[in-house]
Amino acid sequence: MTTSSDTTSGLREELGGDASHLGQTLKGRATQEAETGKNAALGIAGSASGALGKAADDLRDNPDAPEWMAKGLQQVAQQIDRLSGELQGKSIEDMTRDVSRLARQNPGTFLAAAAAAGFAAARLLRAGADHKKHAQDGDTQSQTVSQAQAYTGEAPVWPADENIMPTDTGTGVMPAYGAEGGTIR
Image (cartoon, rainbow, N blue to C red; front, side):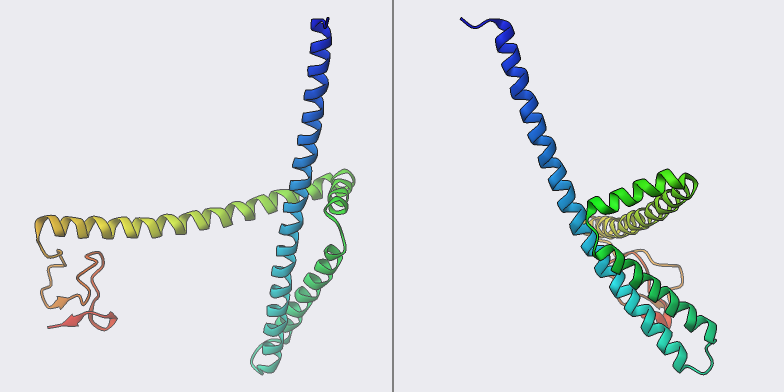
């Protein structure tokens, strides 16, 4: 006959094993995602380095461009190449250890770098969200005007100057004036 303590003990061991297995699975998945992100970032870094190197070469070919600007771009390209080369050979675990070591040895530098990275990430995310919002607002406004026109059967309302007629009356949002695309009667 099994007692409740035996059942509880067995259940506890089974749950512990499941939790351990889940933790290992999550850790493996996180490592895999981080490795994918690292490879993508290295690809972007290589592209950026190449673009900066080409820009530096173009500046050197331009007699009006200052030499210090070309040298600066070339140095940045070389630093990006050096850093990406160092990261290429490191595993995610190695990189995590390096970051932990930096945080312990130079906490002020680490906090400043983390704050700068957070600020940059927030600006990028906000810019993307603003761009998406403006794109959606434009679509919504265009749809609303078109729906109102379809319902009332009226033409869009344009500025009081009757000499200006937009070429695209289908959108009903922004009139095009003169040389910008509208026709003047």
